[in-house]
Length: 303
Image 1 (cartoon, rainbow, N blue to C red):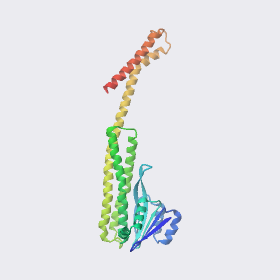
Image 2: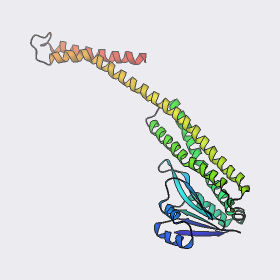
Image 3: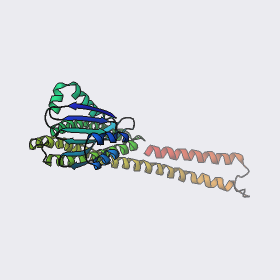
Image 4: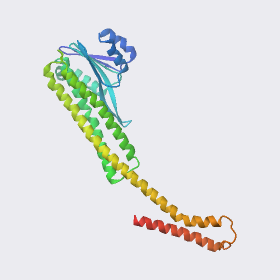
């Protein structure tokens, strides 16, 4: 367990990264939080949640990030306990944006005095605002991919376009799945009347919710565009399939006369015309092939 602390004027920030099961006993010994919350930390609930107690709040927030190697959006969960005197932040894996904020606060006296110089409610706002504004880079990546696919469909339709569209749609749906619960949780925090979340912080949490609402609107608009691109892609695939079927039908029809003639001469039937004349039979085969290629050329020219 990598556990670090930063002391502010009124509270202490405990940052616990790469949390594992054997570290749970140490946390339970040092912090008197509800046992069910520690169970949630152990399991890291799949969905975000916010529990409100008399002396503290407990929340699990999901942070979206883009995995370049997997070419998809994933989420990292962070559990936060906060009371008037302490903020305990627990993650099962290293989360770059949180570690970066902790490092900046450790080195910069101005940032530390700003973020940790007031109450814990203001600190949670500053941290979440930094985290979710950083997560906007995910939207930039998805916007660029949407534009690239739109240009790809309008210029040429490559085989991998369908796969890229499917992956893009999956990423947008998953991003919406992450963002939506966070909006509800921020509203709940804003409506929580605790001493460490005074009413003057309402405007700050409203600003944070506006950030999430803006991300939701952009993701929703991108989803609508991708749905439209999906329809265009399906139409192009259908048109290409029809073209292939048409060509195969033409080939089948053109080959029917030669196939019929060849089948007669292949049954060893006595008395067939020119059956003993190799030159004439060869000319018939050559004429059939020439007719076939002329018909294919004619169809291609008309197209």
